[in-house]
Image (cartoon, rainbow, N blue to C red; front, side, top):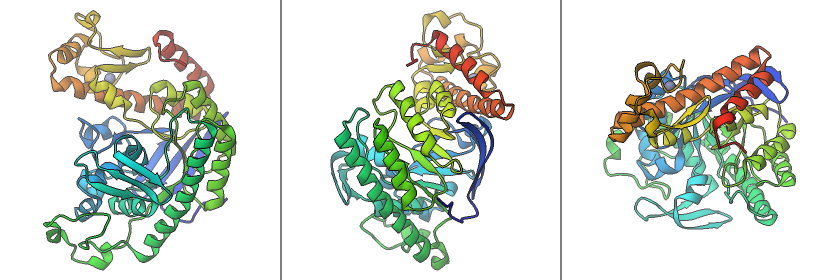
Length: 416
Ligand SMILES: [Zn+2]
């Protein structure tokens, strides 16, 4: 396997302990120290928080979603407004998910066939075709540094036959994604202002047309990541990795189809199947997994990048991550609790307020409470990954992770 020669992307492992590693992933918008958690900006925004707050909390690479931005405001519109980095005012590394997961979980009346997925928008019922080539055009219009292939999603407990079918189709779609990715690299993007079947352009778009249309057509420098599929079936996971490595050269590789209904034990076992067959020189991204203990367990099994909506979603629900497991801030026991949410946490919720006030905000349904807890949870995950990196650099990761997991699980019921 060869790493492609796009010099703006590189990955270097600096420290290893068992399967765990610390490294540096370089992208055109800066470097990411790994292992790292990527905050999720589904609609081009991390819900409730500003990009400045996310950066202050230690966020270095964020994830956005092609499905949502394609439907609204439209990928051509985002491109005409300067691309997703400029549009969302995020000048750091960024990744877009292909939207495969959203097509399978949100869209209505979808039918899957070899060419892609036909679905109706969950917003207005409009009909769309989402295939490998269209997804590449959408993601190249959005312009994130790392873009994901379209893959076929199945339930976590799918049987061997369904899992094999989806895994093999995902490989065929990968080859088509790669061909279209390379074609756009070579030929440039479709000119802005042309109405295509992929995007209905608003009438006011012409006012945004660039001064130099030919230059604007050059696609931004991006890396396409393939996705390992195969459910919880070891042979299928190994075949998926082999198929991906045979398809081409990559800057990184993702593991998909986990945290979709299978047990945590099955998820960890699947990571252990993948780890020995994944190239050591590529960053490994575990998609959609982001509870604190899953992050630490993932790093122990060789994962470098994570993303999940859990920190902000749980925060809005009043659930806070702490080193001693999850805390529900609405509980009456916090009514007179003068302690910070987490002693030593540097987030605004912990440094300025006590549990009694945070509980009051939730009981009174004040939006500051949702924001503070979302920011705290994000800070907690980013800090946990920072501590994991430090433990790897110091050569004490095994002991650190065992101690961390034992404390987290001593009081939480979420352990496997
Ligand atoms: Zn905090």
